[in-house]
Amino acid sequence: METDQILNAVAASAQSWFSRRDTDRERDGLVYCGVCGVPRQTRFGGMIVPCMCRCDMEQQEQEKRQREAQRVLDAIQHSPLYDRVFDGSRFERDMFPDSTPSRVCREYVEKFDQMASEKQGLILYGETGSGKSFYAACVVNAMRKRNVRAQMCSTTRLLMSLDKWERDPIIQAVKSVPLLVLDDIGAERDTDYQQEKLFSVVDARVQSGRLLIVTTNLTPEQLEKPDTQEKERIYSRLLGACTVRLHVHGNKRPGIAREKAAEARRELLG
Ligand SMILES: [Zn+2]
Image 1 (cartoon, rainbow, N blue to C red):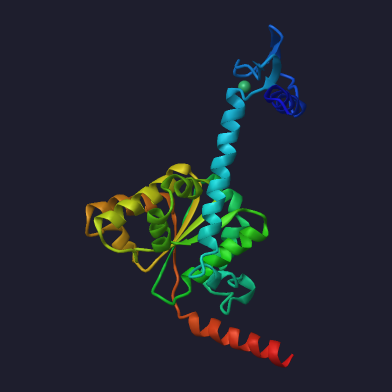
Image 2 (cartoon, helix red, strand yellow):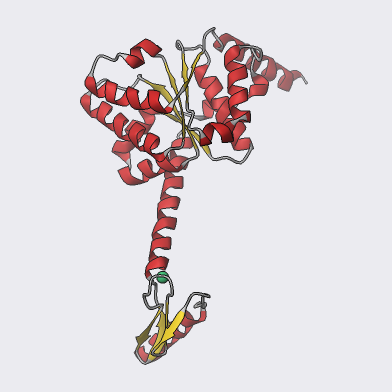
């Protein structure tokens, strides 16, 4: 085939997926976008072929960013070292459904829309093994069941991913997911570099105005009066965004372990 023929075939096939929009205008035999004013067609080797106007390019760029943000979320979620631990965290499996943390977290799910519009984030604090991550994961899983995109990330892992992957898509993911849980804030390494990364994550999230839940071993006093200025910058933002503070106490781990054992037994013995 001659080059001209090839070009004509390409142009004809490009023209075939071109579709007019209601807002389009026509000038000098070419179609122009009525929104941005940029031509949606161009002359090419004696033919008229479609091209992207500014709106098309912006949309393409936005779709690319969304795909990238989702890819990062998926990568974090499917990381073999984390998150799956919490896949099984459901309110139905809670050994202490009458406890305050359990009731508050279920209520939080029920009132999610209200919490989101009032920007009432949640801090779950308590000692290691108290069950705070369990409850945060229960909220995430309950919201997912209601088709709300929700993500739980180990804070340390998220900060590590900022070194491993491109920064922008991660920050984009942090900003865009409707519910984000940052698990175990305060356990990250205490270096300026780590604290600076943590600040960029927390700041991006808080500025997005979307709901944030954090779990931490730190007490409210430690959050209010941290020992460095950088931490104060981070924690003051956290406390501003997470207005509901919930103390989770009592050791849940044996309970969960017992339940897992019981479940395994049921599966084995019927
Ligand atoms: Zn346009």
